[in-house]
Image 1 (spheres, protein in one colour):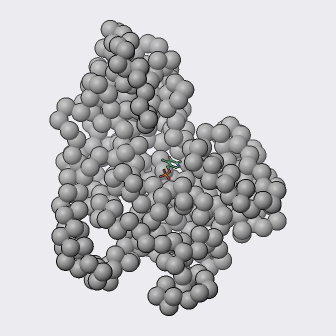
Image 2 (spheres, rainbow, N blue to C red):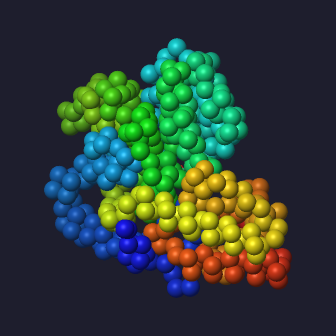
Length: 398
Ligand SMILES: *Cc1c(COP(=O)(O)O)cnc(C)c1O
């Protein structure tokens, strides 16, 4: 059994705070300051340029990729980290489209995270070749997979509602229709068990600052099925993906047969130190245990909120198996109510127009946290303290 008391002790949570936002930005691992100091003093300060070899900076895209691969059911050598998730979406989608050259439809859904749709729109404009982006409601996606579709591009767990696609069913139907699938695992990696191998996934991308706790701006990751890698065209053809980066050839040739071709340019090595420290927390976590715990805590939260907080309606699927690891409620004054919660040190977030979102992250959340959070929420609703004018002010980031 995974020892969640042990993982909880690995994170710094400010005194008195109940942090239900690990789905948006994970908390700082206690090991992070030392890891950053080691990077600064023992690597950058002392090694300088030699660090690319002596400290393995150049291969960390892969060593960290392998650590993430374990969490998504991918084999070693199939996943690399670097860049941002938006970039990785572009890379995966452009590569996937090129593998199905005779089709022009990209199928996504209207619950997808906007940047994924924006990246698709930019790519379509760049290609200027009759592409069409279809965004039906998430529950209609499966029915819309046909032999017109080139690529199905989905976020497995909906960032607003937590609704979870059936990865296996989507992939099976897409493959039967000659289409490929790009999965965004932003709300899946570290949140739910994922198995890109047994589901026969083609491409998967994700970020590492949410459930994986790599820190703000932590690098993204990309997985390409080993059966595809040799034929995958890296359109963001940077020198770190070249067959021989230090041959300084004037012509691009992708690294043959290896995931390295999905690297682009010089990565943010400092952030690798933080990600590496954060991934230590996962070493002894069994993803099935995590899922069981996540469901227990989510069910408790839903039950308590529904019993004690009239006016809030569940926006997430009621069936736990159709959810990821966050729970959302609709409330007309959701923004103000969330500000009041945050003021009382219960941290969730708000997504327009009316969604209050709560990340359920078993690595550091307990039943006592859940019950306390609902106490605070109940009190805010009873006293209507959310009406305080200071809770109406909107910052740049919600
Ligand atoms: C968080 C998230 C992103 C963010 O992309 P960045 O490039 O890291 O800003 C993209 N897609 C999904 C589905 C997300 O949940």
